[in-house]
Length: 124
Image (cartoon, rainbow, N blue to C red; front, side, top):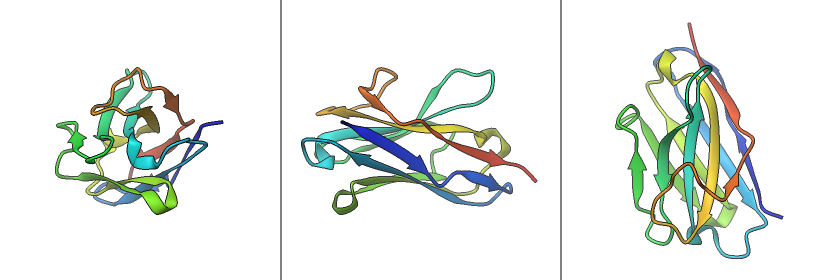
């Protein structure tokens, strides 16, 4: 059974940093066979894609709103994908989800597997 479990959320002041982790299990193939995306949903807003790391070559994508501040990476030995978030802003406040799709170059809202999310709150 495929599972994605996010962690690392919490309350942080503007300008601060957090690192989110997405631990995956139950995959039949190595982690780098899967595209892993990070998405977020703020109260009253649509879910949006924040970042994606593609299968195989690990090409990365970032939403304009987080470019230069967020970095996605993966550690195949730990079956974990990370989202390093720096210089956080109040508008980054949201539930953050990771999601997976096998053999994909890009991520989108139709990913095959989803975690349950971790809450990030940026506030002074």
